Amino acid sequence: MKVAPVNLLGMSRSKMQVLFKELGEPSYRAQQVMKWIHHAGVDDFKLMSNLGKNLREHLSRVAEVRAPRIAGHQISTDGTRKWAIRVAGGGLIETVLIPDGRRATLCVSSQVGCSLDCSFCATGKQGFQQNLSAAEIIGQLWLALKACDAFQNGKGRKITNVVMMGMGEPLLNFDNVVDAMDLMLDDLAYGLSRRRVTLSTSGVVPALDRLAGRSQVSLAISLHAPNDSLRNELVPLNRKYPIEMLLASARNYIESQTDRNRVVSIEYTLLAGVNDQPRQALELAQLLQSYPCKINLIPFNPFSGSGYRRPSGNAVSRFWKILVDAGLRVTVRTTRGDDIDAACGQLVGQVRDRPRRSERHGLAGTVPVVALG
Ligand code: SAH
Ligand code: SF4
Image (cartoon, rainbow, N blue to C red):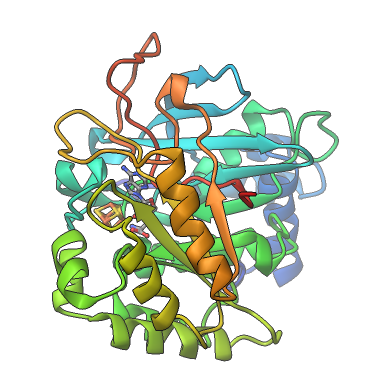
């Protein structure tokens, strides 16, 4: 029986070293192969010129470097790019690249769909289909760098930040997400600073507890409400892991980090008439008064049938001001790429030839933040 080749794309350094040991090769060979894959963007063993011919042939028989396939691509008038990517089993995910001055942030998906069913999220409305493999997660970064001609020696735009804010709940795909994030930080792979890789979660507390001490990435919590009764409605997972428990777990996570002065990003999607009222801003200010955080306000990105509306600019400013006056650090996320349905909002995994303005789907929680005022 023919054994399926092992995909090296999603292998963390430790797993790669174990594999090369099993192949009877010294560990520096694993390092050389990692550099070819992640520094040079090479997926063909024949091109890995500093490996011996025998090893190259052996690897070609037992291993592969296989990224998922790009099924569609759109570019916004503001430079935001969105790729629809086909993963194993046929599902589609979306990945968005947001250029912003010298920064370029890639928003990466972790699952096809999501089981957590937050009331304002189109990915949640899809239901859960499957977890992505580590190769499919890191493959989004690999494909985006290739598409931008940005691998080492390439002249294209470098990706400076990654946020796990695409489709899915990353902490419900723990092992694969952690392996992929390890590669994002590893010097033998993408070498991104721990402050430039962010995991966003709606609050899977046991998994967040497990992440503490295991990972050094930055943390964003999707809060969206200042109290449990409202959060129970918006984020059903809150019934299992209420706000107090979640905030304690997030604090524990940042306290477990090696570099000090880290803070939790609090994501708060503003829904008109639901959670954007001055009394709710006051309640939020009180809740987070002495909490080590910065708050990120995300005006809701509508999609058809959501039943929610985006608040007016005035309502957003009013909410922002109450928090700032209470001494909190607050930014408002700008909408990017909405002409190609890649604005901060929700991804649903579709391939489209032309942008559709009337029915805006976007990406869950994309990135650039600017201070209002
Ligand atoms: N599952 C994770 C990460 C993906 S969602 C999480 O929930 O954190 C990324 C962010 O986008 C979250 O803060 C999410 O609440 C937000 N989001 C989802 N749908 C949105 C919408 N329609 N408009 C604005 N933000 C949205
Ligand atoms: Fe899942 Fe995040 Fe969407 Fe909630 S907001 S349904 S956790 S992807």
